[in-house]
Length: 238
Ligand code: ADP
Ligand code: MG
Image (cartoon, rainbow, N blue to C red; front, side, top):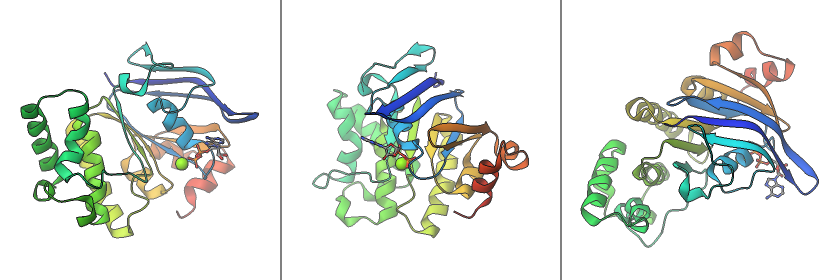
């Protein structure tokens, strides 16, 4: 459960190949962080894993099952984006439970899940509010709550904290680390913040121009960068 194999995956938009044969094996429960300069293909890869973008060549497997051409709703995956859109007219509670409602989960079970997720993210006291009545950090928690409610095997986070101020970012980073420890789910997480990568990742995947430059533990990457690019990128301030 929760293992993910990215096998020789390429992506072209028209004549432009933006991913050039990516191979990453993600273990069940692993926290993998993707880093690399803007435009190197991180979001494209995440969208492909989520099933929001087609795969040009190669395969994606979850727990040994080929999911390359399977629709997003049939993948046991939830994604949190940088620009998460909450439903503005719904309360926080309904925002969290709406996905379950769409899947036909009954009211009693929905209420149970909302209570559990809200307690985990410490947003119990906000359940009756509308998104416009929340701070940025609270909204991001609600977006995470919505993903958590589905209890997926794999979580995808695409720069989830980049719209938050520095103090909140550090706070949320700690929360995400705790969540991962507690839930033990597989996480693939994109960031441009090297400190975030160092503190959260079991392994870091460094990308450039659609090519995986190095995949290794934070210590491996810092102590033994595969090339000049990795050394320069990981050594520079965010
Ligand atoms: P990153 O997330 O690493 O910043 P992206 O995956 O968003 O990079 O983009 C990788 C490259 O693919 C960029 O050159 C971008 O312009 C291009 N790209 C992304 N989505 C599309 C699209 N729908 N159509 C055409 N080009 C795209
Ligand atoms: Mg991106």
